Image 1 (cartoon, rainbow, N blue to C red):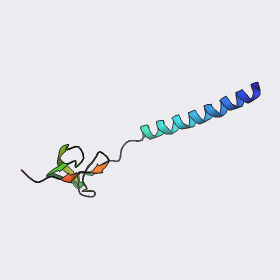
Image 2 (image 1 turned 45 degrees about the vertical axis):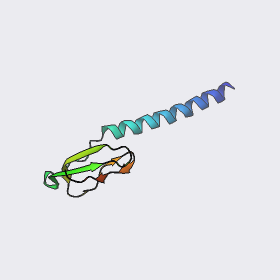
Image 3 (image 1 turned 60 degrees about the vertical axis):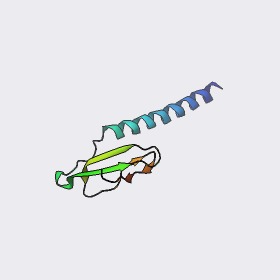
Image 4 (image 1 turned 135 degrees about the horizontal axis):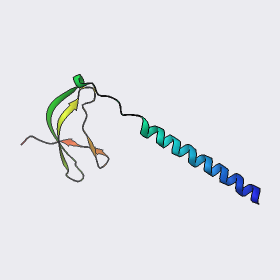
Length: 81
């Protein structure tokens, strides 16, 4: 039984090592740089239809101008006050 216990411990250790190394590699990579020319100022308000949280977006990316997500759903654009 001792040989099997050592083998199982080595396999579990290797799996944990592989998982931790993958997490560390993901944390070391810097986020992608944003081109300042692709960012514009805006004044859009969004509201979560589930919980009522409101967000005011002051800057947006031209390449991806979609609504933020909250409560795992896209927020609705709120009417201007």
